[in-house]
Length: 347
Image (cartoon, rainbow, N blue to C red; front, side):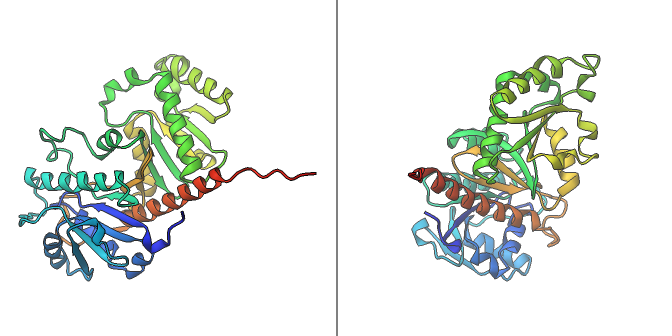
C-alpha cells in the first residue's frame, strides 16, 4: 500500500544531547513544509527538547505523547522515552547522556521492528559514552544488524554518488585478513539488491576499489588484489552481476571514474569515506543497506566543538530524512510491481 506523504512516520533517535543532534533535528522541522512530506516522531522527552528549543530560539512546535498510538499526523511528535530532568552540558562527553542516547535508539529500533514507524533516522551518538553492560556495540549499524533481518552494510549516499564498504569499523592492520571471496560476494550482492529495490536501478553497475596501492602492481605491493579480489569479481561477473574492477583507488575519484557507476565499493573505511566526505560533506547521508527496514543518518558526528552555539548545519540531517522517505517509496513501488502477475497477451 502506498501511503500518503504526510502519513509516512519518520522515527528519530535523538543521539547525544550534548552534541548537535537535537539542534539539527529541530532546525530540520522548523520548515513547516517538511510536515507535508512526513510525520516525525522524536524518541526523547518533550521537556528535554523544550529546553533545547529555547537554547536555539527554535520555532518548532512540539507535541508530547506517551504512546505511539497517540501520534498526530502533521505535528512534530515527541515520544516520552524518559520523564526525569536531564542535565545537558553542550560539548561535554558524559556517560549519563550516552545512556539517554541509547534509550532513545533502542526504543526507536523496537518501534521500527514492530512497524509502528515506517523509517528511522538516527542523530549522531558518541561511540565512547554509549558503552555499557547492556549495550556493547561500536555504533548504530551493528545493533541494527542484530535486531533486524538482513546483512547490514554502510552505504554513503549523495545524489548519484554511492559508496559502500567491504570492511568498516576495524583497524587498518586487520583489513587484509578480513578480505575473502565470500565476504566480497555477500557485500556486492547486498549493494546490488539495494540499488534495485531502494534506488530503482534495474541493471546497476558496481565498481570495486583495490586494497593495495595500484592494486598491488602485479604483486609487488601486495598480492591480495590478484589472489582474492580479482578472482572473486570474475566469478560474480560471470553470474550476471555488472561488477568491475578492482580499480586503483588513488586516481578513481580524481579522474571522475565514479560517475560511470551506480555504486562504488571500497575495501576499508577511510578509502571510501575520505573521498565521499570531500565530494559531499554537509549533504551526504549514511544509509544502512541490506536490512528489511530503513535507517539513515547524517554524515557527521556529535561535533562537540560547536554544540550549543546554534551554528550547526542541518542539511545532512534533512537529506537523511529525504532519503529515508525516497527509499520507503521505492521499496513500496518495487513490492507492488513484484506482486503483480505477469500478463501475457494472447495472439
